[in-house]
Image (cartoon, rainbow, N blue to C red; front, side, top):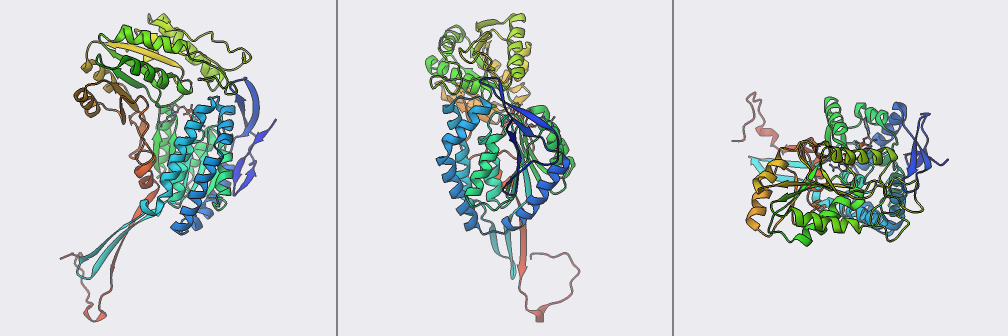
Length: 497
Ligand code: NAD
């Protein structure tokens, strides 16, 4: 069985741990590899290497860093098909979707290519007589990124591109479910000319994460994953004196007002609910129909859902792949059953979906559940699968209340032709990313990505300007060149006037 190692200073590193995780191809149900799961000692070895690498990379010229980032950008683009294949094999998403993920990751590399502009400090001349002040943005040293299974290329690039551009050494702890893309990214960084050790990879689970959180030489942690783990990572990391940004789970609502274009809204709901089998933190999982739009919209959504082609990435006609594991597929199927038991209506039932030739894959058909209420567990939980709940409400205010009382606040969308209603929604909703007739409002790389409430712990959003701020610390230098002849002893607190 192929064994997936860590990456230390440009070479494969098996570490000393005897623990392994299993890596499956979700479309076939076959185990395809074993991944080394690091222990604390393995993490220490990798961090020590990163500390050394950070010292020289942090003082490298901006032009050298820019050159590496530009080369890396070109390599990601020219290796997109290779990366997509690796994603598809271990994650299961179809190739078009994998290429979309790579394109959105690439955007972040392009943003980081502008590092000379992002890392400009500020300077004030003559803040007091003969005194100047300069503020510079310095790297933190060693920073770590802990990433989820659902975007094995894009989320690491959200973090690593800016972290490295800012002069830090970056340690990636990818999901143990689909770790191979991380190693391919490491190859591409190396080929781009990044010095060894600036991008290391540690594979593992809880022990690896806890070791990173405990290690005094790791200055900052970027985490993306489920809310309970995000909360723990935030609490532990900050208790240990680290800077932490921890992005969690979601329950994204899409409101459809009666004046919306129904075909457009139905296309958007189906695309955003079932793309990547609903395993996206920005997936729409609830459509809120404001009366009287419900019946017509559910019909339009159901028609489109029934036409979706479920299958493996090797089938070019497939639009939606399997779920990540058999356990997760079963959990999502149980959520559908619970909704049925709770009295909701299964407008489209994806349980029992069989893909000919891929019978052992972790497939579940797209499911639309109508007449869901707030009290149902399918509404309360983050399902993270191809399940779209429909909630019907009488008024716009009721739709807004539903979203604002939800503990999550990652993304949301409104579909309407009424600019005033859209503006009121955008202003009043307690969610970090809002779409107006845009169902997946993932910000472009020059803005930052982040939810509110239980969808993000920490003060910084991910990537864009907030990413640069997260991976740097300001140093303010106050300078004067006085005439020694005028120098006196003065114990008073220095004044500027
Ligand atoms: P997860 O929380 O299970 O795992 C995320 C990372 O944490 C992985 O690297 C994993 O190895 C590690 N981990 C798992 N258990 C741990 C533990 N007990 N202690 C320490 N580390 C642990 O998440 P997942 O299943 O890989 O990804 C899906 C989740 O991620 C969903 O909840 C989804 O909403 C969320 N997500 C959020 C965003 C966002 O930007 N907010 C983006 C993508 C995914």
